[in-house]
Structure formats: C-alpha cells, structure tokens
Length: 511
Ligand code: ADP
Image 1 (cartoon, rainbow, N blue to C red):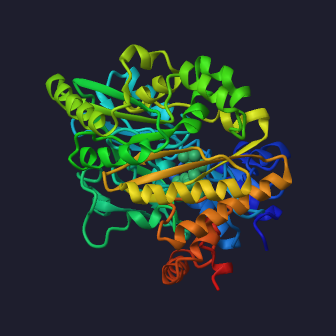
Image 2 (image 1 turned 45 degrees about the vertical axis):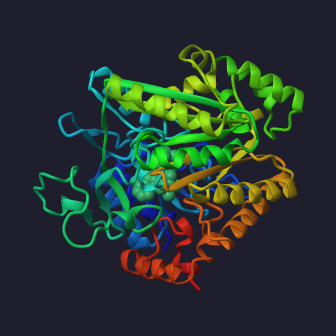
C-alpha cells in the first residue's frame, strides 16, 4: 500500500497536525517546478514537521509504506532545479518550521542552526543583537537555508566561502528514523561539537552532502570576527583576454592569503544580470533581456553607466588598518604590472553602481537577492553550469572556449563568474538563461547543459553540483564511484525512500 493512500497520510497528519499536511492543488503546484522538466513534477503531499522528533516519526511512516520523501530546507535550490523532487508522487518534507538558531557562540565564533534558518534570519539576528561576527552568504536568495547550502556544498564570498569546509558537526535523521550526530557530537555530552570537525573514527559528514543517505536536522558552522578594517576592491578590465592575466595575478595573492575571500572575476554579461536586480539597475532589465542579446552599442553604454569592464574583479581585504593598506598596495602593484589598462574604482565609484554595492555587501556577509533575471516576464528559466578549474590561465582558457563554442551552437550567450576558493581551485559558474514557456528553447537548454557536461568531463573537469534533471546523467560518467554510492544507499536506505534520484543515486535505477 502506498502512503499517498488515505491511511498513511492520516498517520502523518496525526504527527504534525492537519494544518501541516498539505495536499491542495495550489500548495502542490508551488513545489512542482523543475527548471528543465517537461511539465511539472507534482508531489503527492507537503508535510511540515516542527521538530526532529516529528520528522523521525514522519520518516518512519514513509519507510514503513516505502513512499519516497524529499527534504527541502530553505526550499529555493535556485539555479539547480528549484523546490521540487526529482520524481512525481513524492512527499515533500519542508523543514522551514524547524527554524531555530540554537546557538551563536561569540567567543569561539560559530553557530548551530536548524534547517529552516535562512541567511536573512541569521544576518538580522547578528545585527540586531550587535554580535561582532560576520557570516558567509552565497549568491542567490536571502531566503535560502544556511544548512541547505552546506549540504549542497555551496560557495560564498567571504573568507568562509567554502561552506562545507567551514561547517562543523551535523545531526542527521536516517531512513529508519534513527538520529545520529557527526564529528565529536558522537559523544552525547560533547563540549567540542562545533569547534573540532573530525571527531574520532571515520569522518562521516561528507556522506550527508549532495546525497540522499539522511536528512540533516542541525548543522554547525564557523563565523568570522568582524575585522577592524575591511577594504573591498573593485577592478575593471576592458580587454576580453584580461581574465587570463587576472587569474595569473590572483593565484599567488590567493595562495598566500593576501586576498582571503571568495573573490570573483565576473564577465560583463553576468555583472549586468546582477545589476538588473538592484536599485536603479532594475531599469535595465528590458535592455538586458533573458537572452543577453543586446547590441555592442547598448553594451558599451551600459558598461559606462554602471562602471563595468568586460571583466570585473571583486575581492576584499580584512584585518588591521595598517595591514589592509599594505596588502592593498601589493594587490594594486600586481594588477597594474600585468594589466596596465585596468582601473581600481574608488569607494565613491563603487557606491554609485548597483553591481559594486552588492559585491561590497556580499563580501562582508550581507545576503542579497540576485534572481530578477530569471524572473524575466515570469517565465525565464535559469541554470548554473558549474565546472571547477585549476587557477591557471590555460585551464580557464580551455573552459571558456568550451562554454563559448557550446553556447554558440545552441544559441545562448556566455555569462559567467569565476569564484576563487583556496587559490588552487575556482568555481566557473556559467549562467544559462532560457524561456521555460517555450518547449523548443527549454529542450535546447537541456541539450546544451548535457553537452557542456560531456565536453568538460571529457577533458577532466567535474561540475561541483548539478541540477535535478542531470544528476543521473553526470553520475553515470563516474564508474565505480557510482556503484559505491548505490552500495551505501542500500546500507543507509534499503527502501529507497530518501530523495531517490538525488545526485543520480536511486536504487530503482542502479543498473
Ligand atoms: P536552498 O534553500 O539553499 O536553496 P533547498 O532547501 O532548496 O536549498 O535545498 C536544496 C537541496 O538540498 C534539496 O533539493 C535537497 O536535495 C537538499 N537538502 C536540503 N535540505 C536538506 C536536509 N536538511 N538534509 C538533506 N538534504 C537536504
């Protein structure tokens, strides 16, 4: 018997209360939009547990009836599929009601939160309580989940941008309803759960990221002390080849931690896409359009008005006033000797441009909205294709060539941002904008995405994350790793109830 039938749903209703088990058409429609799917993927129900205990009961029932569930934390998943399960008929478990900030430790600079805690909520909490700590934010939506972004291994713009690297300790509900803790949280009275990542024995946290082996109900992560001095750097570069030189300039500055944050080099089309999301920049939405297909004259004019180059570097320095000024001179000299035509914008110039204002905020952890581009006429689709590259001009050149060739073949325009992590790797986040309401264009976008994965994997570049529709496509390229993931799925979730299809892991589809 399937849980969607009356009895199972009645049992769930008994746990969460009638107000939090939703099956009406309007609610289900809100959880059914998958960017690339032909038609919507309708769930059977949406359940909103209030606590780990309620969630445990819900999962136990789903496991008994062998009905798939799909957890969402902030419920955004923008750019990678939206708030939706991979398959129809699942029960969406929306964790938004579990939204307690359980601890912010000022002395040791960390937080412990539940899944429903959003970036905006934590930001307000730190600000309103005058807590001298900064958090990391990714791009996207302030309503995204701090915990959800850790489980997806998102990247952000402060020195704590590698979200999973700076996470510390998880609580997880397994498919049989059991609760476990990772790291030193394995000791019930641990005093070091949020400060020492590794615990004792195998380190399991990674198993619960981009996977479907458990539902994470608590996550710890580190914050940074608010620095005495903060200096955002905005550099505009007008040659199309500037990106290759910039990467070479930035590698040693990043490796030596002169520039410690998730700094980015952004192509003008992406920068204009972001400009269109804020303040006076919103006026340009009709000009920029969902296909970025404006004329060279319009592009020139927009660059001038919004103080943008063909490529744009945003990074930041943090520390004491003296060290920040010394480091600024080092960075300026490095850029100027390699790129004599580049220009450092003054604080006033940055403040006059919505794009640079937004960067300045993101690099000190203020969450920002950046999706008006994908809301274009209410029907645009947006995907991010995100291969990782070494920080070398050869690798970046190879990746940009592949993207430009493939996008030209499918009739799209390249628009991207390179986010530099440790100085060794960068996330090449390539925006694909298309009209969801046009079946032909949507199918072209899907083919384009798959061909990008084919071409990048062929030369050894793996995306750091995929959308809901392409998990299986990518996972099938990974040979024995795919087999091992399915063996683990069998161990953790033999009834295949947790997010089947997530990252291409699905026992029904393992051969
Ligand atoms: P965000 O709010 O950051 O956009 P979502 O809540 O939409 O993120 O989650 C994105 C994806 O991450 C979901 O589709 C799901 O696969 C996974 N996920 C979210 N929350 C959890 C969780 N608590 N435990 C395990 N996986 C999760």
